[in-house]
Image (cartoon, rainbow, N blue to C red; front, side, top):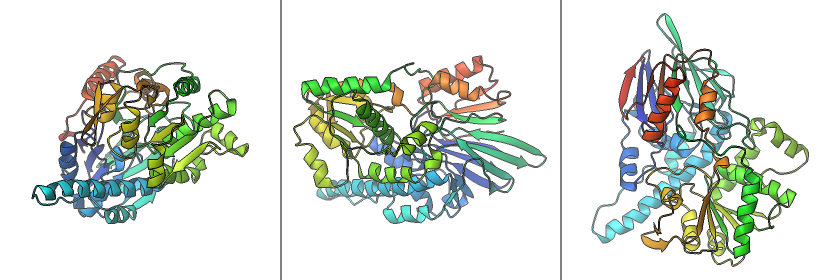
Length: 463
């Protein structure tokens, strides 16, 4: 069996790993790489294999850095199955169509500039028709049910606790007289995350591919998350400003809405209007409503009380472009939640133009900001940020809450992996920036993991 690490190798985004066994090629995830624009376009355009050679895809979850390049895979000839959980399948319907729209809009914007320079037009990475073709290939497999992926290869999904439908991928691989267990963590969530259930740790693995996003970091412990949120809202309200929260449309936005709902019920903060300015988040929230089988016990109680986890009186989901523009001329304090989560694209950029220079307002960071993203520069509180080619001073308060992170930290991930009866004979770390990944490798080795590797992009390992 050969493992090829083709994305999220010594970096956080673009998850893509290839398993070659028994003459079949199985792709684990097919995500978009997110980084500097030119590098991202070139890397995402050039798949490092013939898509027609892929037997099937096994998808861990619906975040765009894990699923976002599936339409191009289909466009270039892949005709196998995309095997994932039912909730992930439903979320991908909205995620991939939205991603296609962004690809088309970006190409249109770039081509206007190229036309003025007399340069030939460029094609988008993929179009809506490619996303629709890709969606026809999805096959939903519920948690804990076994499915055949390829000759000699079976999969079972167990809840990763990272977002709705996210899964730890358990592969049972028979090659000749040998049967081994290969576990791919996808992204591992945290215990007691709102709405979704806790992650289910693996009990055995011969070989492990694990994420390492927070491999050398610890989240704040015993943080009163809702208290922090309430205090930030109150402080910004007293200044007459607005709170801008860049948030991924899937998972993070729904968690925020849930917490704000609870804060309102408990009257812990001023009663401000809350706007979710993301058509994708609005559509995704409907997918969340279709999958109560993924909810944790606390959310089930919410439903039993006939409360909507994703809606309350002061909350407005904004779909229309004109309504989105109107938010920027609104003069009352408010909370605006908008995508994209790393502030690389989307409506959040228009809100950032208004909020960044305003010392009364607050930019609230609620998730991981990858290197080279606008979100990372804001998080680092640079003096000015470039938005749509123009510089804007960064005078707004910038603050962060780590309790909303959907990723397990170093100790949480160590505990998650520590449930195994014995450590895997080999562990491969992916989905982490190189310094964090290398430190986590040392940490796991100290905990008794005999061999921990951090493969480079394109590296192939025979196991």
